[in-house]
Image (cartoon, rainbow, N blue to C red):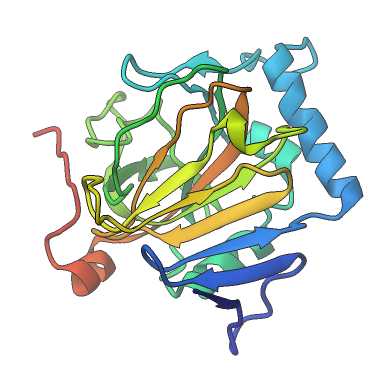
Length: 264
């Protein structure tokens, strides 16, 4: 079941056609998220990273393979890359997302460009509900990306003597689909949503297609089960953004359910 997405206290969404879904867990989907000019601009930037073109910021020549268990090629987003993908990393967008999903505005975010080559394997079912560590020694007053050169994002292990790791918790996941021209159902690459941690005959499921200029948004929780679906037909491209909340806020909502991986 879906209903028109509305929030009485937030001037959001700014553009596009937004819908709220209750199953398999609460989430939102939007189409026509950006106007045509803005979409073409972010698509052009994304394709330049795919091509590894020479006009990228120093050290950012293209996407790289992730882990042995995940076929996607990725590039972690920092301030230099984020400027190419406005409005998703603008102060207004980040603040509005916080308000829309009703989590404290820590302004700690993690984000990445993702591209799954044709023939990538189906991923594992997971929730994204885990710790995210930030090196507070370089924190500012505005948006703050996870700096993996200061500390390990998942465990907080310091990588510098001057690092000051602080633990936060992923609060919401946003997936924006782009550069998937001509996508059809046989191509695969959807985002699967699930009502349980294992898919069985009676498990509630939903598939979100990676159509250009559409978006999927959900709160990270012990129940936000999802995964990437194999794409035999074509490459699947997206931008992923994670909002973070405080440990105290997360525990007030979900007690000790968060996946916490401390380095010591």
